[in-house]
Length: 253
Image (cartoon, rainbow, N blue to C red; front, side):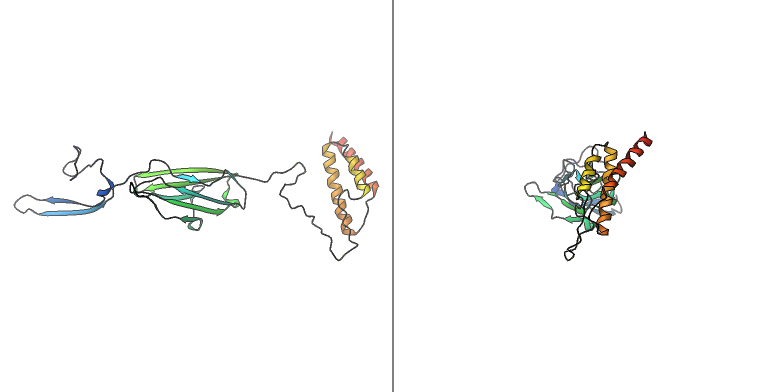
């Protein structure tokens, strides 16, 4: 027999400190006085809930990801009765089922409590990042009496751009690859011949802006030479380039 509190009355019953074992079907019986003594009984299921003591826990998620990376992590609920219902969210949008994997409920046999685990797995794409950030959230709910959530903020890990304007992960192979069967197709890369090397050394004496422009010009010239089959570069073009750069510099000043 359960003890009621002083807050109970003819239409309401308040029970305190009840064990989870009393969960089940409860009945309310109403009887009329004489002479009819009519009786009406209504039944309903009641579940006694033991709430988690902390928020859901997110594990396995890093702080930075690149496009194409795989995000894989778990959301775990603290022990409760029953286990909490878990939901993953990406930028406040509920995650589709194909991103998820549900594990069996873990039971704490000594205290008859339960814990849930929900795995998240997906490939990062451009639409996941908003202004370079992605927000992951896991919410835990038990009926309408418990609701908690945890969040992880992720930043987009963009490739570093070096001073030369090249990413360290950039493909290093040239666009024009010489054929194995063509013995006379000698690809002349920048600074491959003596004239180019002398020109580059002279340009290194110029300010950084002029040097960059000179290097771009030499690279373009080398590609053109390789495509036309020419093996040398006219040294006079270097002097012409230096003269043009100096004239441009004076105009900019």
